[in-house]
Image 1 (tube, rainbow, N blue to C red):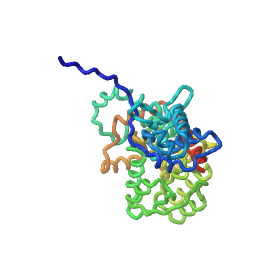
Image 2 (tube, rainbow, N blue to C red):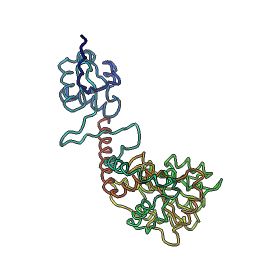
Image 3 (spheres, rainbow, N blue to C red):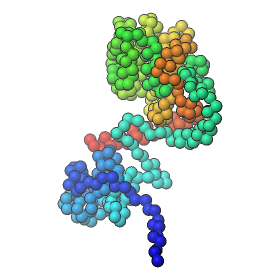
Image 4 (tube, one colour):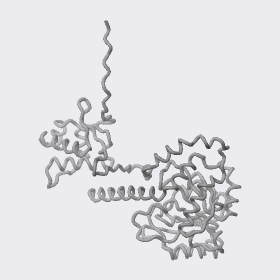
Length: 394
C-alpha cells in the first residue's frame, strides 16, 4: 500500500539572492560606534547600508556567532542588533533560511518608503493600476476602429487643451497633437522645422536625449549656460540676437538636470527676443507639473504669447514623469498650421499613438490633480529621505 504524500502548506520565505560574509560586512560597516548602545548603533548602520543600496534586499547576513567573532563583540550584542532589525521590519529570520534583509512593509500609522537610487525615474503614481484595470474592461470596444491615429483621440486632445486654457493659454483641440511621449514630440518637431545646418540654441547642461534628437535632425547646436541658480538671461538673449537660431530649446520649469525655474520676466524676454529674430521656441514642459516646493507659479510660456507671436512657440509635454515612464503618451501644442505640418511629416517615422494608451491617458487626466498631489507627496518623501541619508553620511 502506497501512501499519498501529504501536501505541505505553502509558506512564504524570504528568497536570499545573495550572501555576505562576516569580513565583507565588517568592511562595509566601517566606523559605526556611537554614544548609543552598541547593538543599536550596529542595527542603525546595517539599516543605512540597506537604504542607500550598498546592501541589497534579500541578502543573507552572517550568523550571529560568525559576525561577533569578526567584529570582536559579544554574541549577545549581535543577537540584540538582529532583533532590532527584525522589529523595525528590516530583517526576516526563518529556520533553514538564516537572516535575510528586506525593506519594511507599511504598518498602521507608518509609511514605508522604497526609493530606487539606481534609476532617475519614479515608480508609477498611486492609483494608476485602478485606471488601467478600468480601461482594460472596455478595451474591446476600440477594436471597432482601425487603430491608426496620427492626430490623437478627440476626447484626449480636448482634455489637454482644457488644461492649457485653465493655465491662461486659450487652446482648442486643433492645437494639440498626441505623440509617443515628449521625446517623440521633440524629435518630430525638430525634423519638421530644421534643415541641415540650421542653428539651434540649447541650454547646457540639458536633457541629453533632446540634444541627440536636435543634432540628429541636422541642427548645429549653440549653448547657453544654466546652473542651479538659474539662467544667465543676458547671455541667453544675447545669444539669440547674435546667433539668430532657427530653433530654441528650453526647459523652463524644474530644468533637467539643475532644477531651476525661469521667472516671468525672463520668459517674457525670451519670447520678445525670439519674435524679433524669427526663432521658434520649443518649450519642454515634461517636468512642469513636478512642483513640490516652488514658492510661486510663474506664468506658462503659452499664456505669455499674444496673437502676433503665437506662431513663435511650440510646447511639448507628457505623462511619463508625472504618472509613469511606461505610459508613452505625450503631446505637442502649437498653432493649427504647425500642427498640420507635423501631421504631414509624422508618417515617415510612426503611424500614431497606441489607442489603449490614449484611453488610459484620458482617464488619467480626469483625475490629474489628485494624481499630481500623490506624485508630489512621493517626490517630497524621496527627496527628504535622500537629504537625511546625505546628512548621515557627512
